[in-house]
Length: 285
Image (cartoon, rainbow, N blue to C red):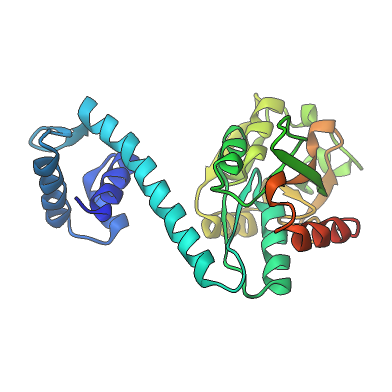
């Protein structure tokens, strides 16, 4: 059994269509099929229900996929640990609840600590604590203090939500708006926004969301069609104005995130330079 086979299996589970999985893995479909058949032979179980035109994970396959994800996660952690041993500076794995503060943190860390190997993930908020406790994350960006004796948090930075509104929309005449003002509106949105994605739908459930997973496609649509879109002070900043629209702040409490930097207390000494720097710099962000 090889890790590549487990990665292939996980991608098939994600993509659901074998040809799509093969394309994502940059492998031919017949080669992928043979690799998975070898895995089945080695495990001694059938992982898929097969028909002439499709193959679907069965119960065996679902169990193996679940454990494969764990194995791959541990393998990735092993690589991080080994890299840290080889490096003059420990690897820094960041788990974040939103992309924009992570962009800021990673850029600043890279500039200040050029020897550090920095990686970042954006899991569900509920998973961040477990990632810290299992030391799969060195630092975390969260929205609230964490109730754990093992974890410490310090203030980091704030992010406020704005709306870019075309001049043809009556809301463009307002100096500020609330989520309720956007009820029933059509909004174009990039999906990889962490917790903000959920906030938008909780606060404006009646809006029609047209979603884009590809950031370049989303950017081109925004530039060419000038739709209603969310922007913030940190990501797609409010200073990035678009011709034919205005940028208006959303003033509900839920439209401002107060981020905190979290880490394990036992690692505080090792992270003292980073944490001290972040606390000092955050006052100016």
